[in-house]
Length: 56
Image (tube, rainbow, N blue to C red):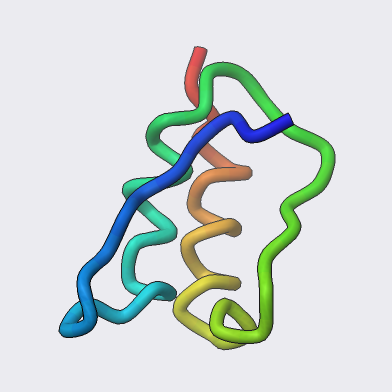
């Protein structure tokens, strides 16, 4: 089930959008799946911030 998304143009990096995507999620989630474009430190940091401050 897709619970969040963000459409980007060719000039926007996908991994830079993870914080905005996570802000769309209501509640907590057990797993995050993404392709190789998201395999990097900015994404890991965004997920860490989200997991410490999930929406209520």
